[in-house]
Length: 278
Image (tube, rainbow, N blue to C red; front, side, top):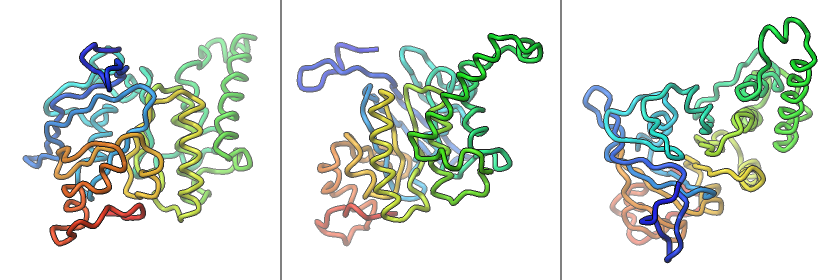
């Protein structure tokens, strides 16, 4: 959905998701306040900020896990605020979680198949009767799930229990499961949490390739600046639930408001270092 008013250097910008005046309060605490974004189709947007800035709350509101207390969200021309999470996922918005939510007693492959079935699960009666159509759909779902595991380097653990895997590998399984929903927008909530520098560098390249291959629009919430700075086209900075800065990675790195939010008022003119965290 493109609005003629939304232009970038004279070129119309294709906006896939818009949030206006978005707010969320918890017993009087304003976790998100007057949040707004025009998410451009095909971009990678980073959302950063100190702990408690409202980043995960933002994802929870967009994906229906929390209803907003104010504001509107429009996705591809449809108003979606207040819809149930499964309906928002079916429309084309998939996410991972800050706290991993895999089915620990299922295999990696079965975890991904649970998501793949959203768009192509055979009818129960057809499956019970063993009809050829159901068998073909089951094979197609399995092949698609295996493709996602392969592109994320997970084929070798396809039959392993999810709970038995290292933390960083579980993170990649979550991304594979989100991709199986065939989203237009992918929201990644701290995908590099628990990873070392080498794993983070590998993940950065992997996210970029997945984004390109699937034609996604991607939003990444992350503390690790070594992932955010080289990956994102644009960055928003949240503090106390409000957007305090927005721009390119180069603009954000030297923005005094961002430096103060992360490092305190005595930080002077020091840039936000690529490896900084909060």
